[in-house]
Length: 273
Image (cartoon, rainbow, N blue to C red; front, side):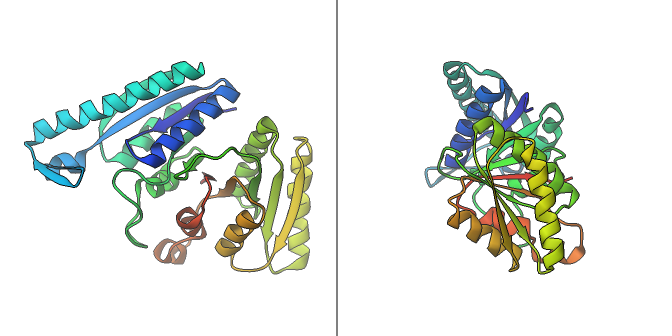
């Protein structure tokens, strides 16, 4: 299913964890990993590099060379890890705005695996997004966002609402669960009892064909909080959900997707369709 995995990498802890997930998925699916290092053009334009809390002023060309060398070291390390795991790996580098560069490269991928945060830091505020947010909003491929620490995926929580993104995510998550032999908790959040039951029946009926263990969860609270609480209660190792609605209120005030991305302790599999 995932024959080509795009792995954007930097030197952050989250990226190192993402590499472990990508290698494990590639091993299971017989996938090729496409490692990508992006030189952040914003750093070149600023002519500043920060390393170990010291700031060194460099000419733009010097800074570009430093960042390219650093990126190549990271890619070389990835190549060695993939070789040890028996996984095919192709590496490349580019220069540009990181999120946009990843989305362009995603044309070669079936799945994007990346850290929830990178070297540039964590979320800065509700209206100031991140590389991860840019990729999830713009990429037309499923995105696996790794948390800081690696953990085996032994249970998957799917948040299901029958929207287009959720339907596609149900398909992806079911395939992952079947491959990993992981049980699935299906969470439906709705205050209409009839609709509640209808949505759950549809999801369970679909998942039956994959031969995975399914546990239904029916809730009627605030969606983001219910998803996070269910993940903790069920000790989920992966949250799978459709990404982003399309109304202006959600765009301005922050969405369910963003809330879960910020607060989840485990990896998240997202798909915007």
